Length: 350
Image (cartoon, rainbow, N blue to C red; front, side, top):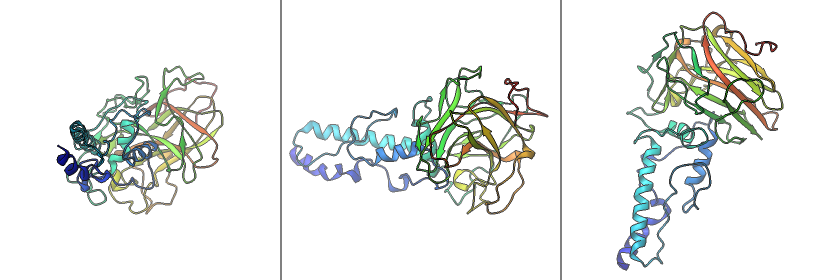
């Protein structure tokens, strides 16, 4: 048995801790946008012998390495089981064993939502193949409410063929609080039980924000046809300090291939169609017609807004000022003709 332990010892080194082929190893996320959760996940992966986890993350710890001083038979058995378990979890995180659904407050789904964007799925090699072609969904025009967060989780309402969830992004320098997209009591005069909340400070590049997807197919944001509607409205507020925010409706023409875009914006993507809104500490209703949305002009080329090719909806703010700032958002919905009357009548709409 001692000979067996010595023979297995070299394979318990950190480079053999997770039995996953190099082709399935996680690559860095695209530099333009990355969720805070991916940095946390990468930090845990970097540890070869982590302590028992104290974060919200609900996956198993990485396997411990078998040292050459180990002599007892049960050590070999335990380490082998840990290695197999670690390999299975790595495959699950890669998306080959299916996605993970997690409630708000857990980083599992949000981390997967970021890390899994760099994998290869169903033969589509990121940066080379137009994966979302043929995966379009069309709104029926009968249920405009995208999400009111009243179920308290990060999944949007599964109506009119919509499938997606909320997640946060930043420029890799921000410190987040809460650490993940969080459904919380909205405060103020908002009559809802929950609203989505994100906050951050000390951002140094482009800032932070929150996103909801409408047609998530595997790891991609594919097209959702909302042309039966004329625009989007939502409720929002800041924290204690006002926030100049950018409301964006991303389309496949403005997202890179690695996110499900059609590739036409490469290499200068993310020039989404957007409009600025001024968030204050009190709740207000904001609305934007498709015709209100404009690109900022830094993309590969200007493109007209196409409501048949919506990939995601963003609400974000810039890196400055670097003090702690918050974004609260609730009751996101399409509208026809005009947005419904505001429930905050003494507060003017955008």
